[in-house]
Image 1 (cartoon, rainbow, N blue to C red):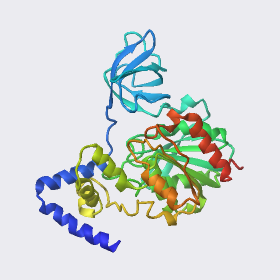
Image 2 (tube, one colour):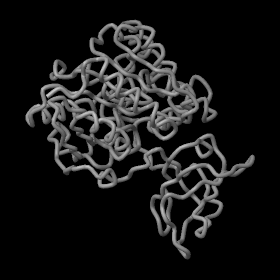
Image 3 (tube, rainbow, N blue to C red):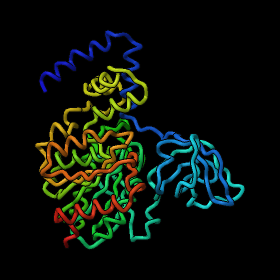
Image 4 (tube, rainbow, N blue to C red):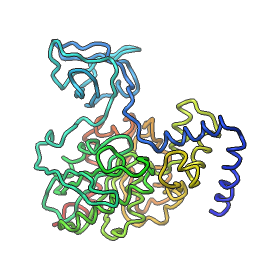
Amino acid sequence: MKSLRHAVALLVPGLFALGGAMTLLVLSIARRVVLPATRPADVEILSVDTGAQTIELTRTPDTELPGRYGLFTTGTHGYVKLGAVLGADAATVRRKLLTQIEPGARVDRAAAFSGWYYSSPSELHLRWENVLVGSPAGPCPAWFFPADSKTWVIQVHGRGVTRAECLRAVPVLHAAGFPNLVISYRNDGEAPRSRSGAYALGAAEWRDVDAAISYAVRRGAERVVLMGWSMGGAVALQTALNSGNRSRVAGLILESPVVDWRGVLRFQAKKAGMRAPLPDLAMSALSVPLTARLSGADEAISFDRLDIVARAEELDLPILILHSDDDGFVPADASHALQRARPDIVTMPRFSVARHTKLWNYDQMGWSAAITDWLRDQGLSASV
């Protein structure tokens, strides 16, 4: 740790010595890491057949996947649900529409493909209520799905999305008897904003999850299982390691999780055509108070503290990791490394083909069975 701090102390002045243009570039990259981004359009709608209720999209690794998905659009509809792939060629995919689009509706070309499927808790046809969880950031909106167990599941969504991402897991957990608390956290667009409005990649957000555990305990929970999606996995892991309520956490379910940010950011930088050492310089900038603030962060971020593979021996509770080897956004390498480091507590069934946070969409039965079996095997099944 001391040698790393020394290296960073040497690197940051060296960064400024490279010149203003390079410094601005590195700070710009660091800023993109921590500042919430709007949902990017990643697919084009080529045509809609309102008679057959089908839609034609540009072909991508996501749009060609079997299963049920969502599509964020603009025009008459803001969000539509997609069903089976009906046909495809080298450039296009035709899918069944599960949301009725009427003749004359305006649907713009730019769209964003999504694994959410459900966009509102009312679509689950379960009893639910809006609640507020008081956290150090302020009152954080949450959805509560009541059930009889004294063990609650607290779900934590990922980066750049909202808690609707988590709705897919509610039915299988509710059927097993668990109350579900689906939370928001600072800077996600629903919960209060911090001074900078920037993500801390789990280093600060865990405090809002800790507050959610306290909320659950006040409402009668004796134990909680934390379920984290993507960056929410990093947040859940930090909660399990740092929370004053740590003794209440009975287990973790991690869906396409970020286990080590360094590997994720290097992977995403390479996909974006960014050359070394830019991603490492950006992470170094975020690790030092001055350049972290210049990058838009509230505080410096310790990537060592966020490296759970390196901290594997600190973990002491059962963990289920659901991660596709074909994730395409958050590589599964660190998840496999954590399983190898702690085979005594980490269960990681093999998934492939499915893309990032789309395991439910691609293989709902296998995904649900993995959760149900793990809860049973760990003795966590809805005890009252």
